Image (cartoon, rainbow over all chains, first blue to last red; front, top):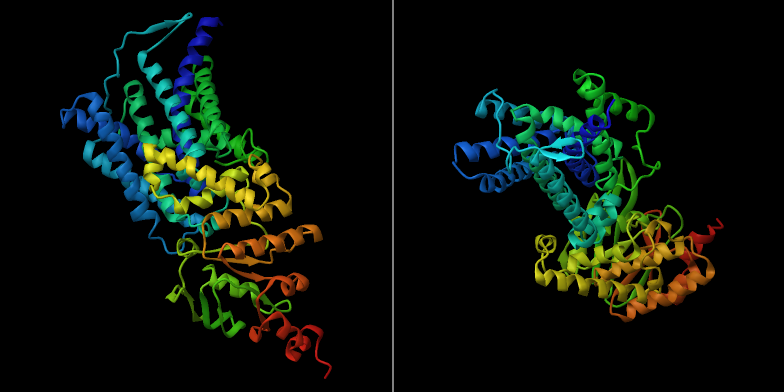
Length: 293
Length: 251
């Protein structure tokens, strides 16, 4: 096998991995604030792409304007989801909440199907389709967009959690919810915040990946599960470990698809997911008690 | 300052507290004592909004705060510490206190996260305030240590520093001397007096009689869910019912 080919797989693996990382961090943020796995996370990824399309085609907005509008709409729907589906629950046992998120995800997907039909749609790339040569491999400008935007979001995320009071308060909730309440942090408000942040991040992921992979009402399932897988590899950390988890997953998928068969692409993620859940449920890097921030 | 009246708590048929009433005066150090199982911690959990009592009322600054959740009580100026220290384990000592200051930060959460200019100034102020509380409790040299790595004694100081950062009018301490050695207990006694000197009312549940008799202005004695006695340390030491409850009746 040639080196160029390997490089090609690595590069495309990195950019899909970056998407998984963004989605995975969304899972972790909500998990850390609430203790639940939000299986509707993938639907906000789908909404990102589909709402962008709506603003582009129906709203006749240029791409640069459609994107922030789509992020705003998806974030608002994440907020609404928390308010209408999560908060009113009387006895919020984790299992109830998880079932609710699955139900919510089916509902959102169904509404999307009614609204946009079952067709696959494309969003134009952000800046041209001229491939760039990197070593012996080629990448599309969109790949660079994906990597750049992901880096930016991860940096912003890190800044928020470590250098702002609100971010610190959110981490405090993750570490000790009871103590957080005692120093006056409104834990429920932090839960709402976590939904806002992760739906915003999910929708951005959905938007930047849409020009490459196309988008449809049901892309959320697969992307959501891959993101979940990245978060599991990262031990539900909302920092570096999940990013590495996403990248590892992306690269393994791309290598597997290239070297074995593209038919196994999705299977690889789930094999990794199952193996991890069996062998190292605390994540690849986690000590038994990992820092879950 | 703080007034509880007619507090009754029944846990599935077991009466943990029955018709307990007392008032705590502003600026006092009040000790709540009693043999094991007297209901001290239950009472604390009710006052601090962790349990909801079966009946009875809690008034804070003549305002009915019965049933309010802990975060609301913190906003109203009442904080507490736990017997088994509750810290944000993965965050630094400094960050723990900064989180305590978050309630007092005037620019809202949104402004902080958007990094508006005044919130940057605010963060500086918060950091300086946090350092001041660390100095007050004598752990400022540990500011950058991860809270989870602190010794139990230092952890307790941090928990107190974080509670003080909320700028409370009243602080409830659940067995603050538990797990401390005698040197640390002495420091704790000094610290509690200095907290009172700041004008903060202190209420503590405590087993260490020497500490309680030493620092408290008033003492409330609970036994088997009832209030047995109330008074100054001198009065309590002379009280026959209290002596009987602690040493056992010689019937």
